[in-house]
Length: 176
Image (cartoon, rainbow, N blue to C red):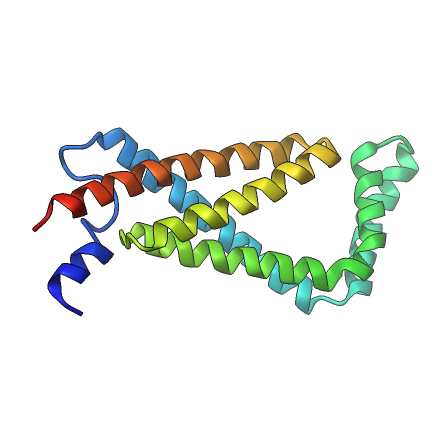
């Protein structure tokens, strides 16, 4: 690879140069590390879901929720977990593949963004936008404030990635 192409691919190890706002740089990097943690947890959850038999998951859910539902039959959280545990058998493989795919994609993209690989930015922006759109859809149909919060966080990272990408492309355009 020639020197000019290498500069186009990777600049400054990621983040803004010394002349840019250091607060933005820190917040962007922290957000990326949080997204990496999210991806790692999704990867771990997907592996656990894939390797744990449905019967074991259902038994664990019953062990946790049945005593709670016996004490308080109107407990919304316990009831929701109980129903999800019963439905998990049919959706376990889909859930595992979904979590594994999301986890791997997020970890790979965050790795390249933290290294400052300029070509990774459009891919990260597209992937995180699609993830946020799907999460937003789920948040809407499930009325989930947790998913809504995660969606807002993903959109914040997308906005920051767009800003950083424009910044890095500006640096690349000014370099000989």
